Length: 182
Image (cartoon, rainbow, N blue to C red):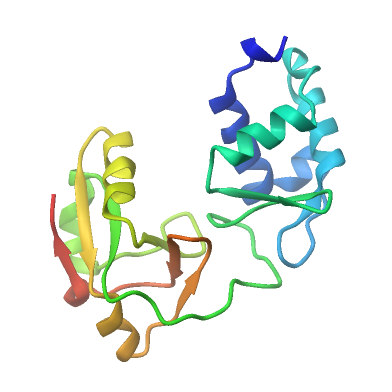
């Protein structure tokens, strides 16, 4: 039965539940965003009748294919992308010299003028992997990749946090630290 389940829909539901609205799914997140894996499985099964057969193995498989979530010791969390406030943030870290941001071409005029802002999220999301930024841009149907001079921004006082192996978070990046690659 699990072979007919839309794995992409599970990923988007996990993202919504763990990043934006855990209470809708009856979840309690701790300060670092961790929820009980069993509680999440129950919530998924009740969210859609065709997910009644979602189990640990399927959920682990879906999470392993994504860098957006982490499972440990019977708990699960989103590693970045929260619109809700968490009590514990990823540690402050010195960033790579250059980071990247994928966006739409339509957003470029505002970005050139105002810089990168965390629209709808708590942080601006950057990556140390140029190809990942291209994939993000491609998913938005309009490729625009921005090179961020992160070392320069850090030297001027910007705070960077590493969410996972390649995703970085920061509050805002002025346009002076940006180069549009498209």
